[in-house]
Image 1 (spheres, rainbow, N blue to C red):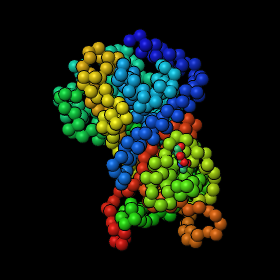
Image 2: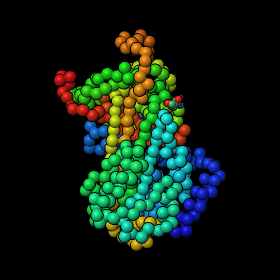
Image 3: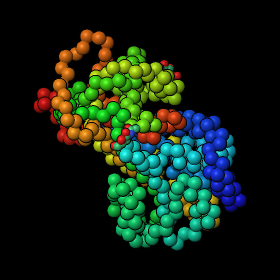
Image 4: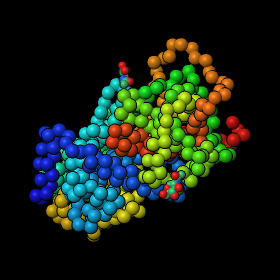
Length: 408
Ligand SMILES: *[C@@H]1O[C@H](CO)[C@@H](O)[C@H](O)[C@H]1NC(C)=O
Ligand SMILES: CC(=O)N[C@H]1CO[C@H](CO)[C@@H](O)[C@@H]1O
């Protein structure tokens, strides 16, 4: 376990020396992260064009990097390949991640809260190496013992942790039947994001409208409106509108990607690192009439269901798994990697705008674009400085009953 110790030492040194020479690693990490993100996204949407999707790429990477710390041989290699960790110089990605984690997460101000919590739950019978426990601190994570022989207590313990870690925002991380007496190890990761817009919406301009889930089906839902200056681009090949909304402080922003038609699948098919970079670099400030639904998403991903499709198989395989960096005995494998995210998008706006606003009815004659997010779109929350995607998702249908178009 020499190398784990070495990594811990290195990090301590780095921390003392302030962030030195990280830009290059962070840049590579960011690149690796976007490629992995788009790949994961494509795996998640497979089979169901109508489903909402949400995940936190950077947080999932961190959870897997934590697991990687204890993995060896092919088990480690498969994680390297799927997450493109191999793009980053050997042994440097853990420290790069540690720095990033500090840069991105656990920021709480009045305006933006970003909270990511990681924990590894191991059965209390399992002897976990001290070096591994120490190495986890890089990720602000801890190892906690649970008694999987009494599954309901184990679930309660894990859910209590998640609830605590997210100020009560995530209270039901695991279902009651999520573990059983055969469970040995669970890696848990919870992310919460709440941001005020740089340019808030006025609640008085929010109104219920139809969100077109398809040509024929709608969901009635509140839409926020504002005319404001936003970074906007139009990619004519895909009739794709791209718009970026800053959060207060402008460290984070939300990017919306919506084709004018219903062919989101075509946009998804064109989604790769180079294209995304091009689209984002085409953004320019414009006066835009913006209508976006208010939405709240809460998604749970069981990553053991999707990672094998991306080549990470040994980790979950009782025979093949090599986690001897976590525990000396060879019989350890990961049973679940649970990733839970909560996101709320609203006016933030509750400064009870005192002035009466006049709804703008007429379409203006100049070239001011309208961005009306009333049918399925992609969204991503990014950290502008590092260009990392904190969250990515697709809103295919807001909450509420599905109605036929003519019932509305
Ligand atoms: C996206 O990338 C592919 C592959 O590089 C390219 O063929 C395609 O034209 C790009 N699409 C757009 C809309 O830029
Ligand atoms: C950058 C920014 O918008 N900061 C605001 C955060 O919230 C406080 C209190 O609500 C405001 O005073 C700041 O201007």
